[in-house]
Image 1 (tube, rainbow, N blue to C red):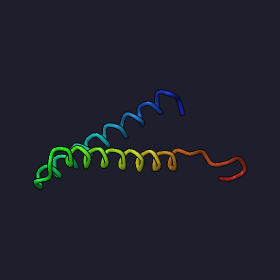
Image 2 (cartoon, one colour):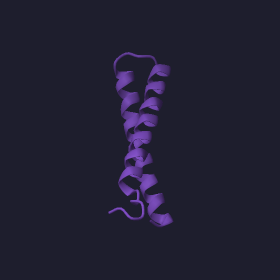
Image 3 (cartoon, rainbow, N blue to C red):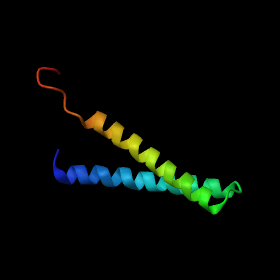
Length: 69
């Protein structure tokens, strides 16, 4: 995998995480939580989504060890 492809996949995961983080923060604020609680909820949603997407991406794009198909 080339560096450009890695950057593209990283950009896709970060943008997806930003969208989910925003949604989490907005939904938290819409349910009458305070501003700080909404920011924390958005940040936790972003971090969790990014970690999950990077783990999935690492699993899917990992090369199999030599000698295995």
